[in-house]
Image (spheres, rainbow, N blue to C red):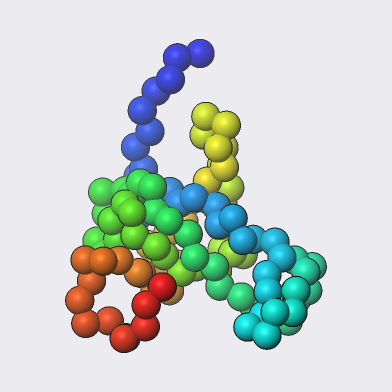
Length: 104
């Protein structure tokens, strides 16, 4: 099978699956297992490609999304997520000026 280029359609984003989807540590250093469901926790991912109708996000940006609102796909042996722009809660990018004063 030959490799073919991929184009995202409409308002879709292709993002890397976050590596910290499993265990995480609290600020105090307590290890929280992936199975612990304290509340809905949003996740960050890096944008790889965007569709033509995406207006406020560019490849290389980090986006905040709900991990429950996603579709997983494997491309050339790597796992990615497909999200819709309307499901993104926040964008972190060096090109954005003025934001909230918080930084990643």
